[in-house]
Length: 158
Image (tube, rainbow, N blue to C red):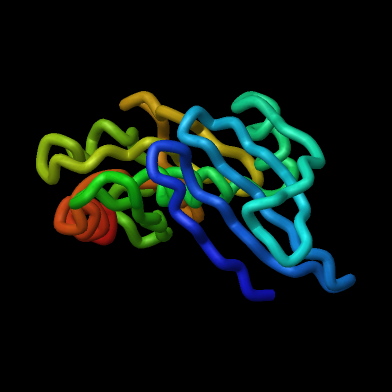
């Protein structure tokens, strides 16, 4: 399915796609975390609202649909800030930090990039503390410059 992203400066991002039934559908993720769902005919500027979720409700739905959505939200937000990016860094069994606390990586100090979440199976540890133990299979959600994200990748990989 093809999804078109439309940046809405100062608002967020709109995702447009056509369902298998031929209906045109849009999801707007606002900078506030609120999410709006709508449908429209041929004119995307004339949507028909379906429902709106506040940030907390959107997070619940995101967890139900799949924890990796949090990484997408950070990526969406970084599109609006030049020079800032979001990345996902896997923790493998061979990582020198598997089984060790996140703080041991010194990632932010060494790279300037921040690990803002740990995706573990179907759960998300948002704003992980330095004492969060990293496990093989974890995905670290990293915000920073492209160089900073690559630096975190290098640290975690060993």
